[in-house]
Amino acid sequence: TQLLEQSPQFLSIQEGENLTVYCNSSSVFSSLQWYRQEPGEGPVLLVTVVTGGEVKKLKRLTFQFGDARKDSSLHITAAQPGDTGLYLCAGARSQNFVFGPGTRLSVLP
Amino acid sequence: NAGVMQNPRHLVRRRGQEARLRCSPMKGHSHVYWYRQLPEEGLKFMVYLQKENIIDESGMPKERFSAEFPKEGPSILRIQQVVRGDSAAYFCASSPGGAPVTQYFGPGTRLLVL
Image: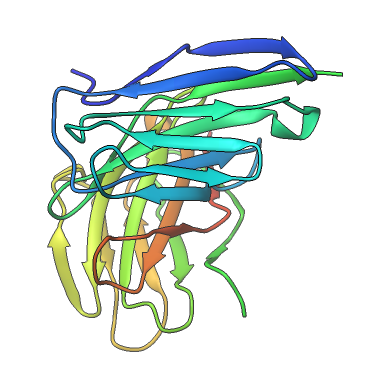
């Protein structure tokens, strides 16, 4: 049973388009993190959200934590080829983290 | 201001051999997490350690796998008598502690068991 679901699993879009990816769970998390991972590298932390309903912006990326702290979304405006990668969400539990399977994004020039 | 370091980056072992993976956390970080990632999958939690203590090993197989984080030196994930199914990328992350917990990942060790 996957504690964290991510959708879509794969996404291929043209440069300049907008997109939203989702991270959903039936569990409540004390905080949630988003990472981007490129082939052959470790995940790189993008953001940590803590409060239900919280919205954080990082340049063209907008992250939202659901009111009930069970889900989150990542919206990218005007996607660029450099945004290509595997986007992972991770929910914090008491002593560890649970990761979703990721959304693999490909932005075509 | 070095990040999390892992070595080796690539490790090839034959079935039955031992694999030792090392992780040096970021300066000032006393919390280390180990994860395993199979191709095209997310990360699976294995173990969480603080200096000299295992806090949570609920994700680590009961046999052949062990982890330590000594007072001095890097954290080590040890896999004895490796099998082909152990082939994966192993990542460690470190954290300074406190809340919310923020993890910073190393580049990973890619283990291939022949």
